Image (cartoon, rainbow, N blue to C red; front, side, top):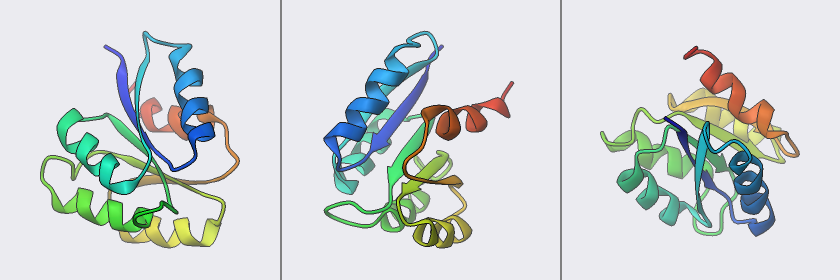
Amino acid sequence: MPKKILAIDDSLALRMFISKTLAQSPEEFTVVTAKDGGEGIQLAQSGSPDLILLDYILPDMKGDAVCQRLVADPTTADIPVVMMSSNAGDIKRAEAEYKNIVKAIAKPFTLKTAVDPVFEAEK
């Protein structure tokens, strides 16, 4: 069964990159995208993704606020999050604070860097 990935980023270009790249392996991944934190939280609650790729700077809230809300909700508390940002300091602080952040990566990145290590542990 394909892994469901929720990509939360305000950049349409990055959301399209993630969707198109992971769509090349439909047997492995399905992708849902959100343009801001509020939409992402709703999709996480209703869609039960296997992984969330989360931008740190969003138009409505920062990524650490999204993580805080996800951890506070029993239906989303255990979803692993890969935090993405061009500012490594922000994501390293968030990574240390929230148990749901399994990896922090600096932009630019490759999807192999972002996704593969999270699912490798399951094999």
